[in-house]
Length: 205
Image (cartoon, rainbow, N blue to C red):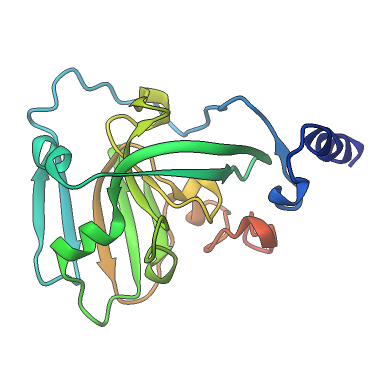
């Protein structure tokens, strides 16, 4: 634990409130890359599409051009990886999840959402965590530039309040659901919810 204590002491010396770090986390200026499988490569986005499915009044399939034509927002947020690193004040640009809800018109019975990404990767989320200002974003830029392939180009989900595996890379669609069900990592031992402040990393946490 001494490493984590030193890290918090260093933050305080830098004038940064160490209470911004959830328990069991350390601060880094780097942006580590972690994912399962290979990184998809997109040379041409003309055939790329994003689907909105499930319990919605208006199912839709959007092209990359249509995604980019939607109103955009920029947010600054701290992010926390389940592997214990945290990065502060990251800047993202994309589409507010509330804008997607305006398009989708979710049914009142929808309580959760599943992110669907390339290669069948999925991540489950409660809608209650995604609604509100800056709560969630469909991000296509990081730090003023398009996402790098390792970080989810061309589109990734972003929900800063939860562990970062919930911010699914290479997003291709979202599905509105009545009730929760596990995504890829949740089926493989990770926590169904993933609150960094409660250290909800794995099934038994």
